[in-house]
Image: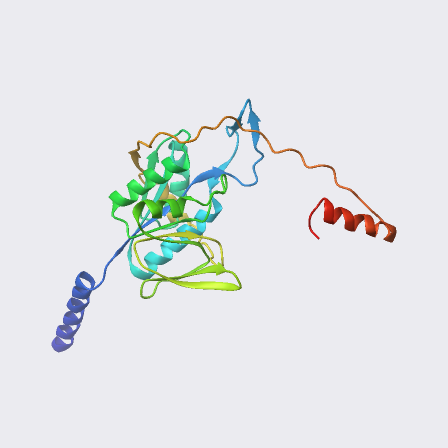
Length: 269
């Protein structure tokens, strides 16, 4: 028994040394954004969108970014920090991802309009100062659809950037899958990197009661930011023009007319 204990102790010490010397724990950031619920009806008050009565939620593609960040941690160890930019109302999104297993939640405190240059600049500064190895984000936000945040941050940091990622393997670094003409591209990614996530086959985990209760007590780390001067100005918001009423045709005699409309008006044939 003494010999067995001695051998087990040596194995434990060996594993500890390997963890301290050979393994590198990954410092992971995931960007999340609070946006209007995609089923909400948007209203214009004066010349601005009125969000006062609109339900707010996490941007859908960010859910896949969170899941990939947590899978990276599950595979390689380390910590996951969720970062958002906004006012106190955005804490709800951070508490939501905390309930899923994110370790730290950070809000960059800014409750006004910020253009893409300002947003990417303050996020890049936070990522640089936080010493992160990899950043996950959604491929685009549901409210703007620009898709520029991930690549823009990577450019500012001088990091690798991959977009529209539908699958990730974490063995021996990162190997990602992205749609390409004629199929999918399999890409080996060198860290540090920014990974912009699409849905693909990713199934996001659900929070349990214990996670939700712990998240309610979690402390949001709030940081002030000073974005650069805006390079664009929003003049006004307007609703898109109403769609014209549809046209209905019956009988074979209408086939020629329908074909012409599909060609000349709908531009589908």
